[in-house]
Image (cartoon, rainbow, N blue to C red; front, side, top):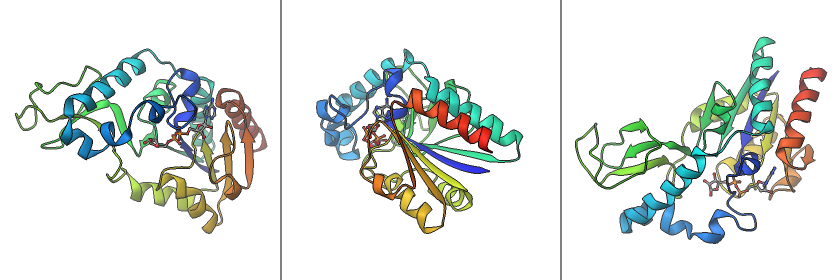
Length: 234
Ligand code: APR
């Protein structure tokens, strides 16, 4: 069986990482135009670096929850049966990896990676971003940014994602509000290709009506039970 799982901020909520659009969400405290756009970075790079440095500090203390662990188990079990789990996440945290997931497709990039805005060189990095750091790639300073896809930038791995979606037997969306494209459009693509669809979320998302099956509740409670059912029903 080939399953395509898309995760969003809701899968990491119970690990203490904030979501974006819930009550007290990140975008209720910050204007995304200031901290999550290329224009915001050009206008005030120090403010953007401070925003992501706070998120790096938070991430350093976060642990995966039962939902992350259940998805790591699903990957191992499906592969043992000759199947596949394609785990695509909108999240920039590393909790899927910390839970043991082997292949995680970060379509919005990764917080724990620094990118040089001048030469695009990448390096794993959880230290605070500064304007003084000299890029090992091009030798220039003042280019350090998080390797995170900002609004107006192109998400990563889109070809690989479309290919995986077309070969899936089941598309499952976990912990996302269905507000941001292209991820919010995956369920429509799946349906158009005759792929079964399931939404697992705290509450109905913006495109809940498009899902064949809907399971609501906290991810750390619902996802392990759903994985167990998939593995026992085969
Ligand atoms: N269990 C399951 N779902 C949860 C939980 C939980 N414990 N807590 C919250 N949720 C759900 C909310 O109901 C909501 O539908 O998670 C979803 C979070 O939605 P958003 O905050 O919009 O996050 P997300 O959908 O991941 O945002 C998509 O927007 O800001 C950009 O790039 C950013 O990747 C992000 C993208």
